[in-house]
Length: 306
Image (cartoon, rainbow, N blue to C red; front, side, top):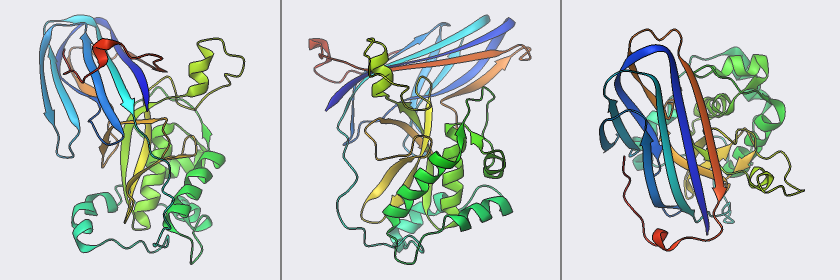
């Protein structure tokens, strides 16, 4: 078990005061066999009403409606979680990579995650053809190999603009962000009949964490650490939903901290403003570090507050 502290700060700055519509915050993970939420709180620069709910996929959503006008909106999510990660399963995989076969009951639930969301692209089809599996390659082995292929063949390049590149652009340019690589893998797998979904969350980088203490062996750390992160989950019979991070070539890694999963890519924070948005600037910073000793106040889970 590891205990992690997470601070996720998002700041919007405007050239003049603006009003605000509802803001959708997807920043709080749910408890699971792998994650225990110990503490959760929000720091909000503008007073306003907050309302918590679960969306149709079971993600925890906070609706926040700031009151009044301001030239800056600051949203900070503070989390303390305990991680109980499991390694890649050692069981033999009874399923070949293609075709992947789901039971009728599973397929009724998984269908929205099997249907591609983008138009067919010859560049994507050619890339898939070059990375097809052998006739007897197990599905888990193929997914791990595909994750490594994207990590090896594409160059990570941070991009401030919102939104996702379509898979064809990622292939043609050979570059992208974590969300672009996740979306490429998801849409490739959907065309092969896999159920795959988009995951937003955080990335713990042990090397980056050691940098803060001045450790000589710190190194560069994981790509995408220091901001929000994105990867994909793929459903396999017997194993269930499994995590694959093509940005860093990781599979079922303890460093991946899941917050929410969706059919289409969605940002952790989104909302509307009332006023002139042309001069809007956004900055995002995420700090994830391991806590050495749990304090007595963290002995039991606490409810989130705003």
